[in-house]
Length: 129
Image (cartoon, rainbow, N blue to C red):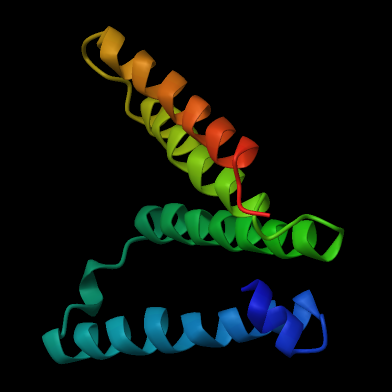
């Protein structure tokens, strides 16, 4: 992303537009073709569409946040480790809010959360310079 942004005159917004075009090709045309060939348009429901559309908007806003972080001085070797270590942890907690587990999480789950944070910290502390 950063290399593309540099190749586009440093414009993160232009880079984000290219990401959007890639999503158009990969996330709309391919599934649209598969759904059309299967004739499964009837599987769409208002609830399913609302939640999946909302999730897509949140994902796109997250990607835009990365672009803004890079535009405003975030380093390409700092921003991604924070995002990609933090996103799975946040995702698990959000999933647990919407679908509460029947049993309490194992202590190993919490060890994994701590390890993810420690791993991100190590990557950031010893990143290549």
